Image (cartoon, rainbow, N blue to C red; front, side, top):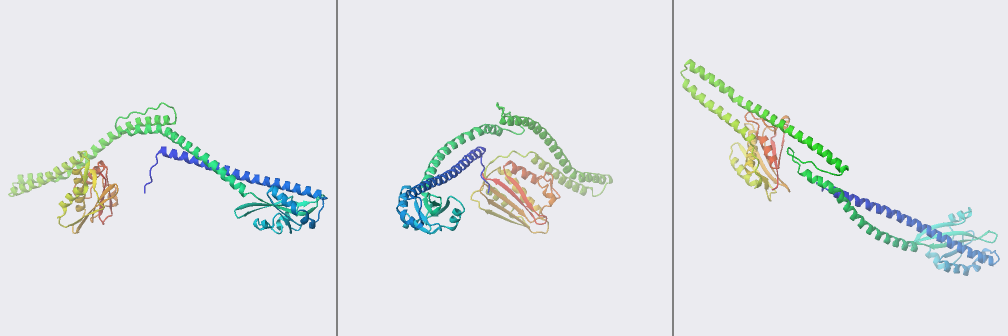
Length: 485
């Protein structure tokens, strides 16, 4: 399947839009990543501030009560204080003994909801024992992002008397903030994308407008005719292209004129050579016949009358051959310009096939496929010559003693119609395939070798094509391809 062709203007426009879209996505991704980083950093700082406030309040309360306290006293002394701090700072606060066992919390029901452990994790204990001021653990529970922070609660002499843990929920804050950020970013990007698309459209139009002007001028160029140079005032990249094109145009005109002259001379030489060769063949036996008749006259042969009749008959046949040769070359040299019109191809072919249906020693089949319409552009008289030539060639390719089978098929396609003429003849050799459409090439003992060259010439002038398939000893198939009218 042929891919749709994109214009340069469309490719530039799509490329610019793609670059804009990619830059928006990259910028948005970086902004979103930075936002996440900033949000996470903000939450951590906020948690640390709350921890410091809780720690300072608890230390102050401890100092108010002498600065010392046993583990047994914590349950009694801090039961109301941590509830107060929890309400002020919106935190869940829990206290453990130095071995990590649960002592007291702000709300025992929240322990299960927030998945707060009844015993501090060994990893957390190890971090605190080894000298870390605090240990933080991140968890996600029921689509909520929770931060668990632990630290030692010291007495006035900085000796640990308990482990304090706080649970901080930041998912609600982050979620609302991110949604608001994405909405604002999306609205801004939609407006910017529409503006950028409009700018890209005008830029692509401006870039390709000058190229389109050059293309329009180039469309009027005729090979072998007089072509005007393209004028371009700007000394830019397009100006350099136009300047080089004008130079090549002059060189092309010179080359085209020289080539046309050489082709004409070569064609006349080939034509003269072929005409001389074809005429020379019958002239030799004609000369011998004249000489033989002259000797019979001089010898006074008694059967001179009979020999004269044979001479007249032979000379007439040779003259007819010369006349046929002259007609063939004249038809090929004077191939008229086709009178293109819309014609029904199958109707023309039907009339031609009817002429050959009753030929002896040949089985002729004629089939049609997918032909809702067989209207094509062509010259009716030249099409008749093409079909006659291919059918005659097919018959002449079948050797004596072989029952000839000629198959003619017409098949319709979407934009074209193809005619196939097949035979079960001797086929075409590999060497012959290279010259099959060359004038004066023939595989037959008689003929000028102009038939298939004429077929190709006609098909090219009508906008069609001719090609073939063949294998020596297995026949040949010639295909005529027509564009629908």
